[in-house]
Amino acid sequence: MLLMLTPFGGPPAQAAGSRYDQLVKMEAAWDAANLHRDIAALNRVLAPDFVQINEDGSVVYRADALGKMAASTTHATASKAENRIIKIDGDTAVLTAVYTEVGQSPKGYYRVVLNIADIYRYTKGEWRGSVGYGHIVELKSGQPKPLAL
Image (cartoon, rainbow, N blue to C red; front, side):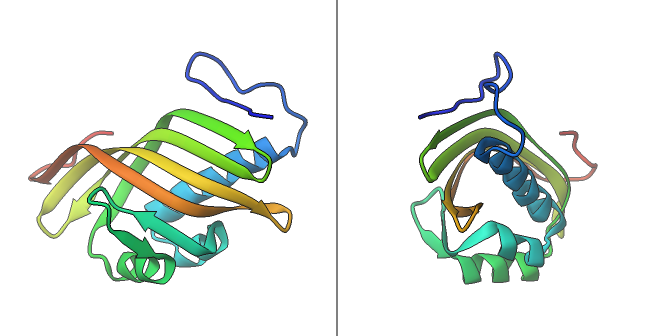
């Protein structure tokens, strides 16, 4: 069965604690961990075989992605995800959204907007992120003042 959340209404009626609710909480945890560069939280959210597919088609594996995040000198200050669509089929889920992040890098303030697609697998009673992809829609960087979400 497929379940979907659209920007035109709320999620379909679900029992409390359903897989759908668990997935929404896991995606929120992933977003918060990214915002705060919380490597321990990302270790809980991302599957051991997680891969990130970059816009140029290159693939980054979990350990490298977490290592780059830990060493980064860029600091996000706020983020939001909008227009989420969630589809669940058995033990696999796909979540798409428009993700916006603002922050500061050594070169100045930035704002990036991405179309994201995350694929989750349900194993051992929980959802884990398996694949993440982001396509940059807008990027402003090197700005002298903070930018709004």
